[in-house]
Image (cartoon, each protein chain N blue to C red):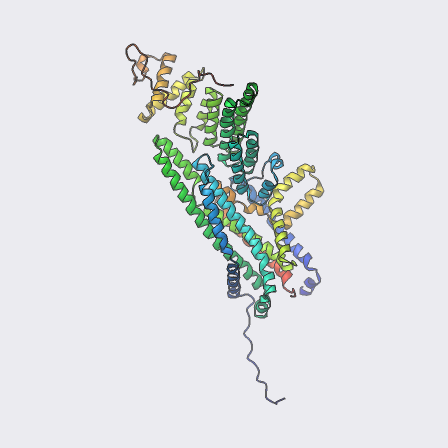
Length: 283
Length: 302
């Protein structure tokens, strides 16, 4: 046996052992890889369309297992684009970042914030751009931010922070209380959902035409749930809905801000920072 | 010549086929050799990097700042581990030949397999110690920033439930004990890389060649699962391409599998048994690659 082995060239022996080991380990590795990817421990390969967008260093980083370092560098670069108001470059950077780390909800939240809030705000005030172009880009950025948020939610279905940012775009930029209410509604019960999501769902539902009954049911349930929920905004919204829906007096909640003689109700000014949807907003 | 009777020497002590003590001795001399190369100075650079990243404020929220800090520091840990494994391993055998230390070692009752194993163990000890120190530095930095952000959040005021939500988000992106598993993942990856480099250095003509080829093998090993999907799509599932890819898959280790530290750092929960499975897989790689290295090294003449 020893003599036989001595007759076989070394490189053939080495390749044979490598091949045998490879054949033995391949099925185990494939199975393990699938399990790790499905558990979210191993990051899936970047999407095919994203591979084409990677520059040389990003591609090398991806191949070299340095995705997190490359994506952190690109976040810095994107921040630079944000400072210079280079929105297209910023979006392009985040395309790569989110392709490299699709399960990092912070990246999705950031790109939705940059494109949906910052870029649109810039279009509202940048007078160097003709107005028709500003309006076109405003809409394009707002819709683009929504698409990015939906894409991010596809990758992170339980993300509250992406939904939080999406709701901001709907309420701040598109003045769409129905969609805002829908997004806040989806946040209820999610792991990192803020406590105010339940209330905000009701507030925006109250402003969505045709959804007043659902809004009233939701808000009154919150009101009865705990005294901690007896907040000025909640009470104001319930009182407004009671009037709008003509709720019998016996069923109405007590008014903590009774109307003063000869004046309207002593309503606090926008206590929860809810925007007034009657204001004209850029489209 | 004198007629003196030659007294027969007492029969030599039988040398065991394998001795852990001999392997450990070589490992410790390798550690000394690497420490003299001022390897641990890298830790200063690492600590400096963390200080910079931890104090540069470009993130939009504390949670994101912590997430970035974690990703950069564990990315640097991973980079250090595999790069060090390649460079240190590639330098060791040629250095021993150059210094003629190898002749001294192999003239003693030390088997070549023990020599290779000792060299590998020495590199792994240095990598292990470095990773442990880097993990501690990194944990201190993350906890320090996390505590600071939490204190700011509490001092900021607001409704109790909102503060609690913010604190929970910071905690989620802050320090978790699972991060130790991320550092361990980098160690496992470095161990396989070192074993591959030892194999290459047993028949390579120079350290530079070993380093370049090892990096190439590492990149290919990292990319082949990604490249498989891409090339098969581009070539419309060509049989020839499929065969070439299969050969790559069989011969070159799958390094992408060892990159699970990235998932842990971004917050994925560690599935039970994963660490054991990865440890066993790494052990398999080490045994096989040392054995194959021995085939190339056993009767190599210097």
